[in-house]
Image 1: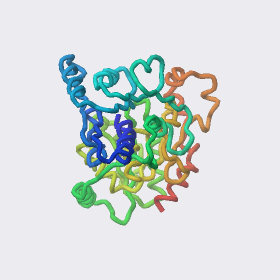
Image 2 (image 1 turned 135 degrees about the horizontal axis):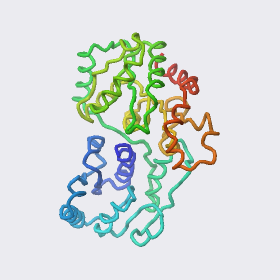
Image 3 (image 1 turned 30 degrees about the vertical axis):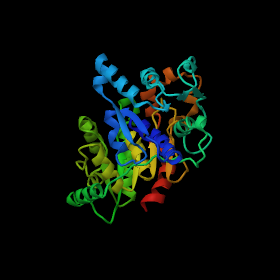
Image 4 (image 1 turned 45 degrees about the vertical axis):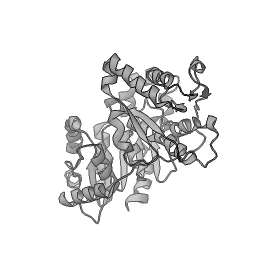
Amino acid sequence: MIGDVLVSSVLCDNLRKAYPNATIDYMVYESTVAVLQGNKSISNLVLFKEEHRKSKWAFFKFLMKIRKAKYDIVIDAYAKIESFLPVIFSGAKRKISYDKKWRSLIFTDVVKKKQVPTSNLGLIIEQRLSLLSPLHLDIELETFPRLYVTPEEEHFAKALFESNGLAPSRKTVMLSIIGSSPDKTYPSEYMAAIIDYIADHYPVNMLFNYIPNQKELALEIFRLCKPETQSKIYFDLLGKNLREFIAIMHECDVIIGNDGGAINMAKALHKPSFIIFSPWIDKKGWATFEDGKNHISVHVSEYKPQLFEGKSPKEIFAENRSLYHEFDPALFMPLLEQFAKNHLD
């Protein structure tokens, strides 16, 4: 959800650019608000809360609040059944979303959803930007999602680094060691090998990105690393919330590891990224801003395409763990070495 909300915020940025005096509201899950703080393109956040899921009466009141806003245009980037009722209740004259069966009954404008990217923006961003096409905006489109860090947050992160004894002369690597779920998490022994390589070849500080309920798995990866590597890892340097993580990431130099929200936030802070995609994920959607230098991603299908031949997405998902174990880091080590030389030397 964090990645989706962040990427879709480019719609707000472009609408603000085209309509500087408009009221531009953004409906998001309450848990994602942190990635939108400081974004002046957004007039108001319309928060979809857990109570709206659990209570029909709360959801009805939520819909009536949307109704009272009297929107002129509604753009549905979520494009799922859950969002259709807010669209209908909005009463907007123009309602825009992706083209699918029977959606023309709800929306005034439907856009064919692209399936193949035509630039290095990544498919997910190209799809979002296409939702603006019915409006024929006379502007140069903004394409890069942004995160905003306050001076106070910068000071907090710098002070945190200093109090934890991070060597200021060294570059700092954020390691996305655990994905959002087990099926998006690179095998621990392989991740440890990557961390050892970085520690062996570069004078760096290393931070682990994990949440409290992932601590045991994070410790497992830590223990698999060599003692010399462990001495460079500041295991307990964590943010207490999403805004603190953003501030910490702002002070790091690069991010390496599993695809997920942390990667998308790092990119929005203009940090170089090296991403390892899960076998069951089609990387063309979220491989954004790939340029072979600042943003690089890898997928096992690029090295062992025969493992995927003739298999449906359902079959690939069922074999996800075994496919992950086919993805030895030695396969993509030349790419990682080049990335590290560009950004850690």
